[in-house]
Image 1 (spheres, one colour):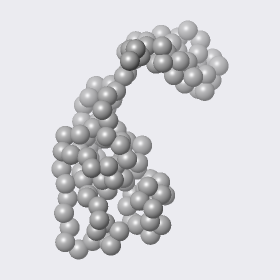
Image 2 (cartoon, rainbow, N blue to C red):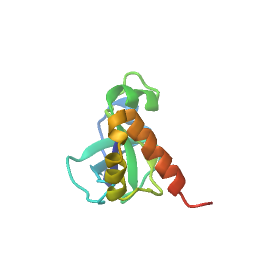
Image 3 (cartoon, rainbow, N blue to C red):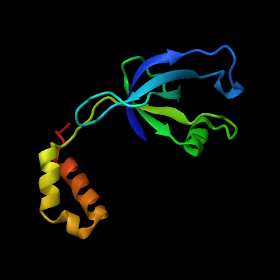
Length: 126
């Protein structure tokens, strides 16, 4: 899955029939920690009604794209599956100190679980 920003749309007069009812958008990957946009632009089917400038989640894998579009013959490789309203990210220092406290000794699953617990406890009430 890719976090990215919609930078535009693409129109095609001749296209695969599975693209007739959908909109095609251009998405540039976005770094969630820095907000920097860059990398290879992705052409994606917009399944959620995103707009230019929106931060979106893109499934970038053929079989997942076919499942989202419910079309086993679609040539789509990437599909916008969500519009991001908000991201709550721990500081990179907290992530590093969490790993330094020994979570990495227990393996990647333990580190991910510790990270999820930390995110849950740092969420604002509401």
